[in-house]
Image (cartoon, rainbow, N blue to C red; front, side, top):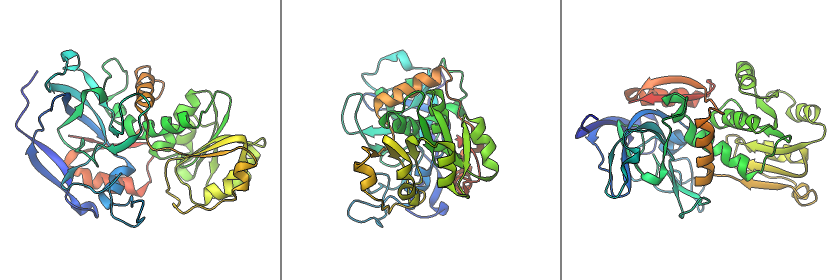
Length: 350
């Protein structure tokens, strides 16, 4: 195995704001601490979290308008990038050598506790340096051996945040085979992942999209694609006259108020985003009279992520790659991501 250099190329944010706050720099290769490994990055995927962390768009519990990273103030400068695929090239003290030289995927979550059901309270690329770089460190327990997966490095890099979030929603929403699921924002990273995973689970998938993206959403496994620019509620009623069992929602806004009456008795509405607005009002009677649930879902647990990696080893999900850019074009890649004109994931190659 080649020697690890002293310096590496990285892209980091120096402050909250626009793409001009991304800077490409030479920095020291991080040394793996006890219990960590050093990963040589082969691909890193972009997410909306990259845009919102750079913009400081997450707010705080006390001030919704506060500039903030994913879960609090960002320690600048910060190397972005949550979704990493690569090769383990060095080990910190106390780490067994079994992963050395393996192709891996990193679970980017920082958890609040040990154990399989811990909750994510931080994210690589926001609360610690991420993978917009040639090398990144990660705790060994967050590194998954994917050497035997038939997926490409780009596809593996596309998994952690989008597919982890989608699987977290599906698990928390207790989606079962044969149920009917409605997926909002179905052409985006989390939406397309939700369509694929729900379909693999044997659910009937109704997906919301529009325009030229509908064919790609249908190809991902949607049974029916509904046009978000038309009479959406009418389309849902026609497609599922008996109601919806589970909604996987990254849009929120008016969709929640208008859509809650579409849930069947005991239905579950799972929210993992607010592309359509974070201020939501709905008739609470639709909630308690029908034993329905509104469930907040933030990323995944360690158990969810391990399940996702098992699916990827069997190629039960195959992420769609929309575009790839060299690392030094990270700003351009983020600008393309912000247009939301693509279907699938955008990746960077260090």
